[in-house]
Length: 68
Image (cartoon, rainbow, N blue to C red; front, side):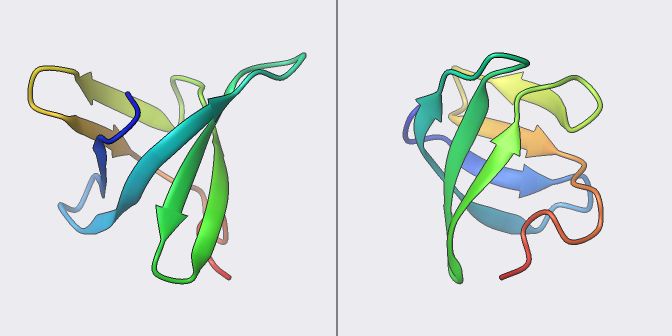
C-alpha cells in the first residue's frame, strides 16, 4: 500500500500512503497530505476500497480526520 494515492469517496485526491503503523486496536495508514502527515485508521468504515493494482486507496474520512 505504500505509495498508493489516497482518494476520498467524492473523488478528491487527499494524499499518499507513506507507511503503515501497527497499533493495538487497528493498524494505521500514514498518509502524507498537503497539510502534513495524518494517521488514518485501517478500518472498513473509513478505508472503503483498496486497489493494489491501481495504486489507490479510497477513504470515507469522518469530519476533521485529515484537517490540520
